[in-house]
Length: 123
Image (cartoon, rainbow, N blue to C red; front, side, top):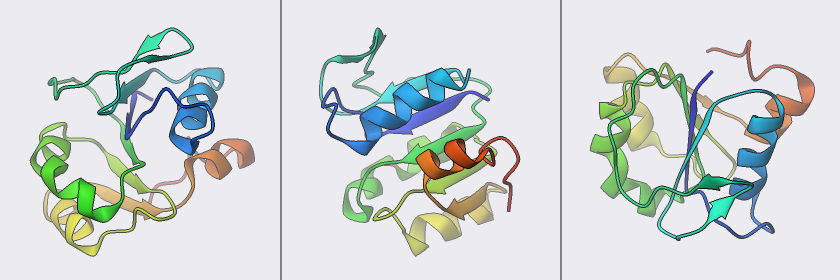
């Protein structure tokens, strides 16, 4: 399940960093995208908005105000779902996603991975 981690950071104290690491450990193809340069265990953090095919999930680590400038990009990726991690809940983006046939879930990617529901949980 190819996953975009939006809000990726090279800071290992952040949940976005840990999400990239854990997704990799669970065998998922991960695309870390963020504004900070660096890498996460060998994966370069992408600092622009490339078109990427076959995205299953976009997992958000940006607060709602910082998400606004990413709306069009997120929708253009045509993911099957968007995960709103704690603190990223955003009714406006959720409505836009649903309008574009993208499932949304308010959950924690790390908890989903550790409990084995990341691969099965679809709303």
